[in-house]
Amino acid sequence: MRHQLGMNAATPAEQEPDDVFAWRRSQLERSGFPRRLAACVAHDGRYDLHRLIELVERGCPPELAMRILAPLEGDGPA
Image 1: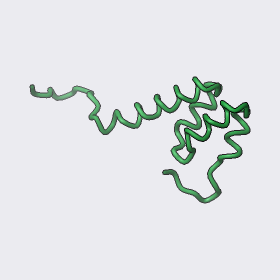
Image 2: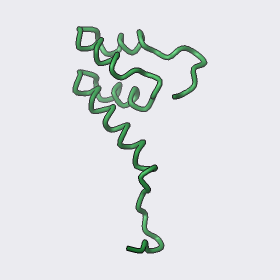
Image 3: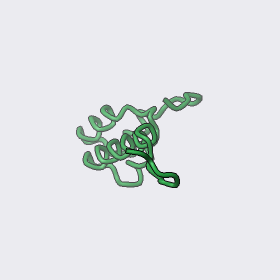
Image 4: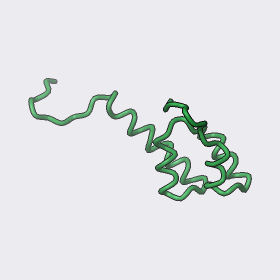
C-alpha cells in the first residue's frame, strides 16, 4: 500500500513516546495520583514509576512520594 502525499500518519517511533506517557499516567492515576501530578511524573522518565506506586499503595501521599523519589539536581532526563 502506498502512502499519499499530505497524509499525517505518525510513524511507530513517533507514537511510542505518547503510548508510554499514556500508560505511565494511567498507572499513576489508578494508584491514587491526581491527574495533574500523574501527567507531570509520566513525562519525567527519571522517576521510578514502580517505587512511586509502591509508596502510595503503602499510604504515602502522592506529593510526598514524589519528593522522596525526586531526581537529584543535575540529573538529566532518562
